[in-house]
Amino acid sequence: MAKIILDQAMMEAAVYGGAVLGGGGGGWIEDGMETGRLALEVGSPVLVTADEMNDADLLATVALVGAPAAENQYVKPMHYVRALQLLEKTIGQPIKGIITNENGAGTTVNGWFQAAVTGLPVIDLPCNGRAHPTGSMGAMNLHEVEGYISHQAAVGGKDELYHEVCVSGQLQQAAGLVRKVSVETGGLVVVARNPISVGYAREHGAPGAISQAIEVGQALLGAKGEAAIEAVCRKLGGRIVTAGSVDECELTTAGGFDVGRVVISGHEMTFWNEYMTLEHKGERLGTFPDLIMTLDANTAKPIVSAEIEKGQQIAVIHVPKENLLLSATMRNKQLLAAVEGAVGKQILPYLFG
Image 1 (cartoon, rainbow, N blue to C red):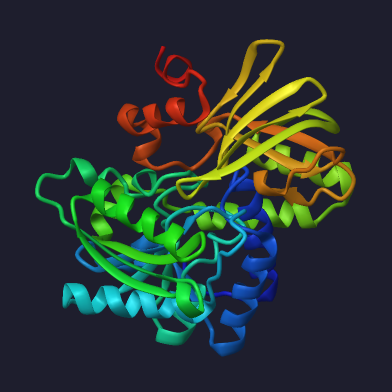
Image 2: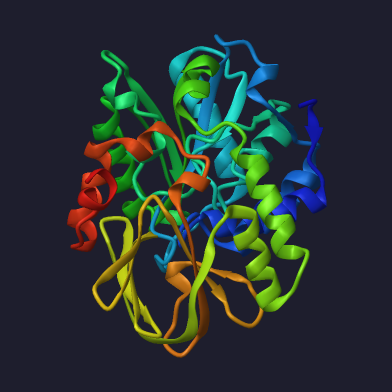
């Protein structure tokens, strides 16, 4: 793939397609659109494949960490640039490209503003091709690399809640500290983290997943209502499981996560930022990292878990994990086991037998 200069139509498709692949998390459409528009206003971000890079080139992951429903969360585009600057200063080496941690309404366009300001390319190689709750799930199994030191810079909040923090240490401990910082800032921080070579990222990440988000967004935006939802399902090889009124909705924000459950037409979903399980009358229909997603049944607008309210008319779609572009972490038993404690549902038996 030649270098692609990202434009308005691609940005909108990336945000809406990312919203679908967010699986209930991954940020808000409005925030993604704001960041994308600003990136296009200040420069011309470029998307390239990993094949355009040298294996030894250093990439930095940019991400949002925290709870999207937190009332006091506050991040601005310049926080993204500041976090990248802090990370580069910490490691004392130049960053050659920017990657996002995941697909999501806000996260698919992570890095576009930094790319527009700095001239660095956005690499079509997310850490994961769908959204996920923990930082470790977006770290390409670096916690298993002997001697790897995670460097993470986090920025967010405003006024007395504003924080700039640099953390270096073992990956899971560093991720945990950044999660705590997100709570102190009001709920959300921008993070630049885990410098890694292109060669490692290509092997353990999700090459091509930004392009997939753009294609999903094009399918969604190319139709209206139920036809748009059906177009998304065709693109991803998924199906509409049910559509109806939200009968029950529970959400709590704890430890930097949105946690809860939703019941639509007798179908129960649990979420830990992202939807983790989908069941009907005790039968498991979908299990993370399958894609389980909610969309407005009338307009087809993707609705994240934090937006769900009782009485909404919602369609639920399911896409098997085999049809997604996923990273190595989505096959890691240790990381996936954490889901069970968060939502109180079995996960591993449905994934590994």
